[in-house]
Amino acid sequence: QVQLQESGPGLVKPSETLSLTCRVSGASVSRGNYYWSWIRQPPGKRPEWIGYVFYTGSTNYNPSLESRVSISADKSKNQFSLRLSSVTAADTAVYYCARDALDGIDFWGQGTLVTVSS
Amino acid sequence: DIQMTQSPSTLSASVGDRVTITCRASQNINIWLAWYQQKPGKAPNLLIYKASTLESGVPSRFSGSGSGAEFTLTISSLQPDDFATYYCQQYNTYSRTFGQGTKVEIK
Image 1 (cartoon, rainbow over the protein chains, first blue to last red):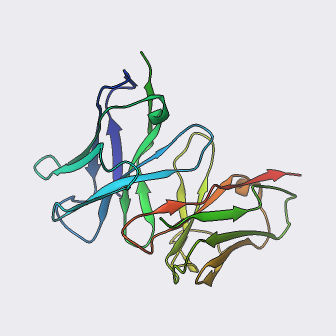
Image 2 (image 1 turned 90 degrees about the vertical axis):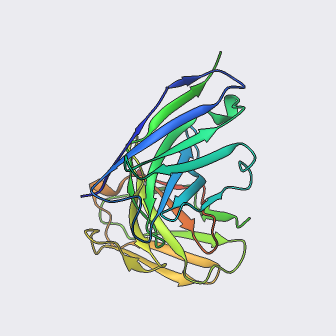
């Protein structure tokens, strides 16, 4: 069974960089036709796709966030990471890591709430 | 950017009712649409992909249809476990976008 687990600070100050890591078990981030993804959901709102990293290392990002976001994979640790710079209160959300199977997002982490506040 | 619009935003129904949710895309997305169910405090759960293919383990009372820019999710006989929020999501391009959600409430 594929499992994903997010980790990282739950509180980030405005203008700083949000960093999260997703540990994957039951699957490999270095094999297979999957997009290892980050998705966020502000309280009471729809999910918002942030971007993904492919097993080849190639990435794609939401155009609205592209100037501030970076996603990378660490094959030796079987995990992938998100960095979002220059955060504001609008970046407060539950952040999910997930496996995008190219036909739907079939496995999700439990989510981690990140609050941007001084 | 492809925009996804769901209707209605909220739906009140009773156990046993047939329920239909509509999702419209701002442009042709062929059949590249998925549906998810989300309960409070939980991650979304994949129900349907390729507009009409049921994900493994999902009850057969859920079905999806449509192509191009208009899609529907139908629950044939609403069960107590089905009261939740439902989202559509397009994956026609390299990016992904979600609808605003439809909350199915107890009538």
